[in-house]
Length: 234
Image (cartoon, rainbow, N blue to C red):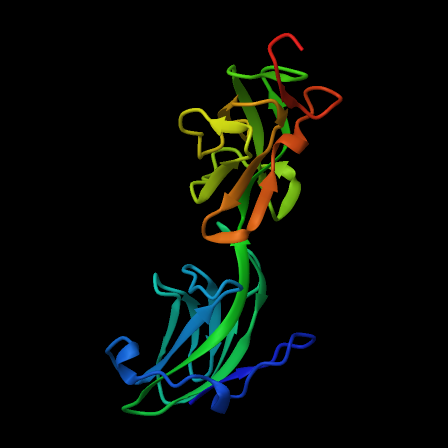
C-alpha cells in the first residue's frame, strides 16, 4: 500500500482509505514496486518534479510525462518525499511526503500533492519604444526582463519562457510573435499595437500554471506615468 504522510503545518491529507482506487493497469508494467501520481494545485500531473525515495535502497526520482514517480526495488518500506526548493527549471513551493511498502509480485498506486511554478518568467522592469502615451495604430516594442524566481533581483540570460502566453487587454493587440527566450542581457521583446483609446494592458500567463502571471504594462519604467493608448499627438 501507499499512504500520504501529512507535511507539518500543511492542510490535512486524506488517509489511504479516502484515496480513489487505481487499477493495476494504470501503473507501468514491470517488477514489484509502486507508482505515485503527482497532483498539482490545478489538478494537473506535472512532469520533471524531483523526489527522493528512501528504504532498502535510496532513489532519486523525477516525474515522467504523465506526472508519475515510479519506485522499484527490493521488498520493504520506502519513504517518498517530493522535494521543495529551486531546481534547474522549476521552483517547488510545496511537496507532500508518503510511505509505501513494496511487496514481491505486486505493483500498487497512490498520489501526492505538489505546488510548483517555472523558475524563469517574464517580469519587470519593462521599457517601451514610444511614450508616454502609445498612439493608436502604431507599433510599440516592449522589452521586459526575464527573471529568476529563485532570486527576483537576478536576470536570467538565455533562459526559455516558451510556456508563457501574452494576453492583451481590450485596447491592445500583439503584433507578430513575441520572443520566448531571453537574450544575453536577460531581456525579451514583444510588439504591441493600440486598437482604441484607453488603458493598455498586457498579461503574461504560464499556460502550464495559470496562477503564475504578471501584468507587464504596469511595470513600464520608461516614463514616470503608466502608458495609455491615445490618439496620435495627444
